[in-house]
Length: 71
Image 1 (cartoon, rainbow, N blue to C red):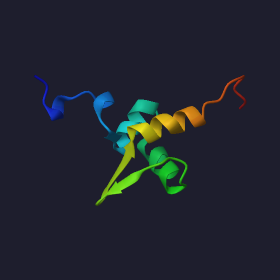
Image 2: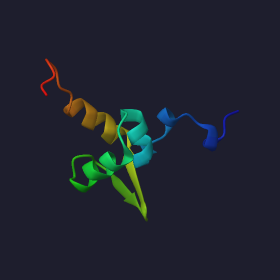
Image 3: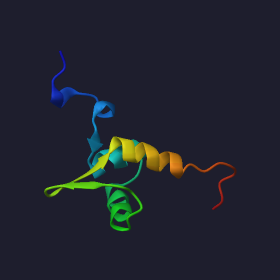
Image 4: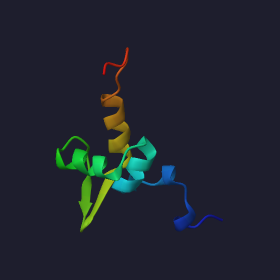
């Protein structure tokens, strides 16, 4: 039987900025910058910052781009 500490990240309801950075392949400071600029939804739980899984999934869908990459 799996305890809470060993649960898979994908099963959690919210992620820390560091976990989101790992999931998206970005630096943690980039995630905090996006939070500061209110580009990424988050919640505060006391002193903790968390990004709800559903909000992250919605944000990804809404920011999905298609077509050629422009540099």
